[in-house]
Amino acid sequence: MKVRLLDIAHARSGDKGDTANVGLIAIEPVWYPVLERYVTRERVAAHFHGIIDGPVERYELPNLKALNFLLHGALDGGGTLSLKTDAQGKVFSTAMLRMVLDIPEDEAKALKLPGSKQWPSYQRSPKE
Amino acid sequence: MSSTNQSGRIVRVAAGQGFWGDWLEAPRRQAEGGQIDYLMLDYLAEVTMSILQKQKERDPKMGYARDFIGAVESIWPAIAERGVRVIANAGGVNPPACAEAVRQSAERAGVSKSVRIGVVTGDDLLPRLDELIAGGHALANMETGEPLSTVRDRVLSANAYIGSTPIVEALSQKANIVITGRSTDTALTMAPLRFEFGWGAEDWDRLAAGIIAGHIIECGAQCSGGNCLYDWQNIPDLANVGYPIVEGSADGTFVVAKHPNTGGRISIRSVTEQLVYEMGDPHSYITPDVVADFTTIHLEDAGENRVRVFGIKGRPPTDKLKVSIAYRAGFKAVGTLVYSWPDALPKAQLADRVLRERLDNLGLRFDKVLSEFVGASATHGPLAGDPGDPPEVQLRFGVRGEDKAAVERFTREIAPLVLNGPPSVTGFAGGRPKVEEIVAYWPALVDKRVVQTRVEVLG
Image (cartoon, rainbow over all chains, first blue to last red):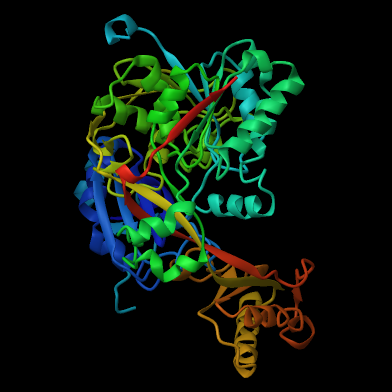
């Protein structure tokens, strides 16, 4: 089943120099393992391919039902150097929530994940 | 003060500003909306110090966050009569001048006899930079590894981030207003808790709890409903949003709350959004006082608009302090034009190509040229997908470089496009783009032992 991150998580993002961080939080605590299993470092790097220049790091915070991603080389130098509208990475949060996950039907049903087949797959690959 | 005598006692630290430019109403609303013990005002962001340094160069009595004087003026009765104590990093690069302005305000308000002003200095490393570099402190850029000597002649300000100890010292000398320079944002909240409960300098778990309390409220309403994505449509009465208050206990646990009859919402979700804001490695949130571990934080619903925070672990800090350095890094300008339906995006894209060709033909060279299409892809890039045929798209075109003349020449190339470029263009009323000097941020580390803070309490 296709599940859009926006429907199962919320997020806030910010900056440290040229790095944007995205904190991704499960809306329901029981959905946190879905984030941990499917929103991998590799998946996020593919999602932001062509948008950021550097590597992606992932940290787990099971206590807060959250993942923290560091997106390096995301902000055109960051801070005052950046020419970007989003120089401080404030809306990388919602860019992350566009991601659509493919979750096995039985797993999605057991967790009562809100899903829909209408979302196009945002499974972007580095080849794009 | 031992913790056994303190059980059940609550100390309330209220946040009144999350950055310089935050809501002017907030400090007064926090001081008058209910019971608080401390008002914490955070004014400093990464490049604020360099702006203040420029102001101080023009006038030696400047260089601090002047909004702070207005904030204090709006709450003198709370400070002088009800004993609310104020802690602020409003001193910027000139805490003594800030203290003098506060003292004059107290005199005007007729309260100077009951006000003692504490001033924390010693964070300013600018006058000592050459001595430090000569002494083998490279002050290398934490992101690039380059030594500071590569930009030494362009440095505008250099300040060590300092911790809670000098603030605790000022409070113990009975200051009711404590003014610092580049204190960490979190120390402004942790210091009064440490002082009131008598936490030791090696009481790592409680110090870490105080730091995390500070992290939660240092951005003001950003933990109490402001900028909250979860259920944003239903967050009540943002027009009267309540800024957060930490209700601290001696054991290091605390409740995040707000005054009654205020808007916004404090929930596990709103607090979690703030906890992950600007987070790096959650296992190691490094401060001058303690290293806090965000993976040990536990949140619990404690009633309407109340979240209890507990379980926090900390460990000893490093032997370094972070240094915030600002330096001149060239020039930039950004110009915008709005193109309307039909085919707003292709029109804006054509204007972008025309502009790039003209800049090339002029032989102008920049370190960076960036064009964005606001309304189509500016913030989410290719993730945004096909925008369709939107009613309008803004071309936002920026250049950056060392050559000020080239950046200035670029600013003359936007307006002509209105008459000699693609059609259906508007939104140029702002005039020619402004050339801005870039003051960039250079984060570095320095040995703790070279920074000596000083505390003076006046009055």
